[in-house]
Image (cartoon, rainbow, N blue to C red; front, side, top):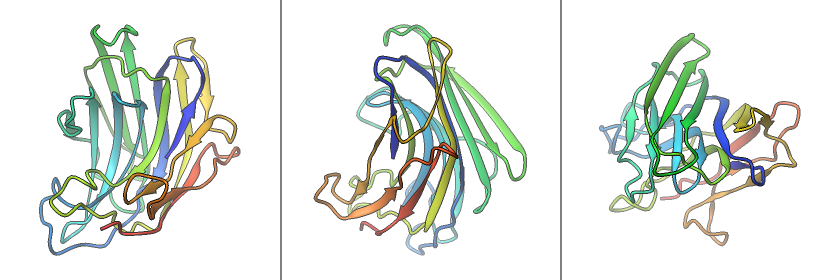
Length: 223
């Protein structure tokens, strides 16, 4: 997970494009809301988030679904997740952007705007909802396994091979655009225990200054 780190800039939006990878099916799961998932998304914030993305889900017949979320740090990350967006198939090129409009104060009303586009089929969806400012001066470009430690036996990270993010950028409150570069990001590796001594599950490569992106590679199921 690269995270743009831009000092004291207040970030209002983030955007990214990636190729949605295929995952193998798992006959033990039929409900897409309760199955091992490789999730790909962009957003702003850290403990509070405004985010949008698309999941490759290892149900018995794999499913591919988009979603939006504003997560206000309530302790339940799925509380404000909504499954919505264009129909997506493995191999499609996906674009997502999020934008916050409103006050910089967390307790003041604001609006979150979400755009999700399947660039392969040109299917486009937009959404909006009330949200507090997520703050924390960070833009995120992420692959993760949601709830990996929260299911009774822990969800694993489905084998997605690799996928490439491009055109990753964020905008600040001064109207400046910041592209993902080798010089301005914090690179985070996903491990099975969430710590540096764990087994690597997925690994974001170094930022590419030509594409403003990176390649994320699957390494381990993480069961």
